[in-house]
Length: 188
Ligand SMILES: [Zn+2]
Image 1 (tube, rainbow, N blue to C red):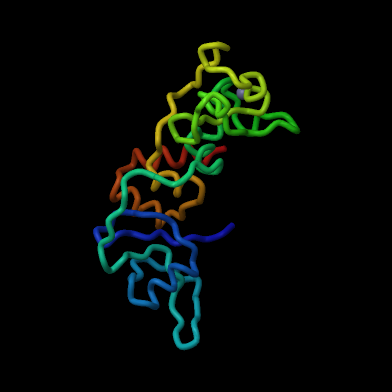
Image 2 (cartoon, rainbow, N blue to C red):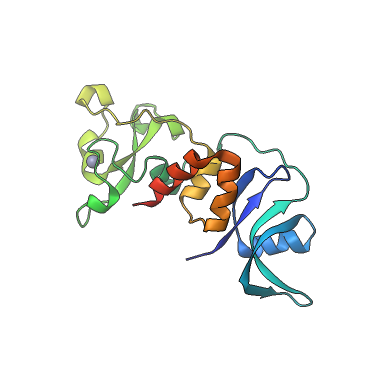
């Protein structure tokens, strides 16, 4: 398991989990301060040694777009859809050997659909094959949830694991409900 460090904005808004190396770089460059450290673990650079950061806070506020504008990736797509086929409702762990979660386009690419969040859903390979290049209405396959563009911060947490200390900061800022939702994504 790769241990990430939770980065907070200067406003204490949780932003994302960053790799430890990057977190250390930000701290050493004076771009972030350590808010919480893992006192059992020590990291060393050439001149310094200090507790491994669990939560850092950027020293200058950065503006963050509210929506995740990057290309849809399967990692984030499956996380958004809770690792569940949106047609038959099976969870990833219920798939048979040789079956897999895939990306399905509501409006198929061959019929002018595009790779945007609102046109893609998670589908198991048999459902994807069955739907083929038809529209949902043509074959009577409607996704369980209307696909939406997700909040990128939630996704970046969903695909990694938070430590209890990091979770506390998310709860402080977003409330227990967000934390609960993230925890339910983690049970897969
Ligand atoms: Zn399915």
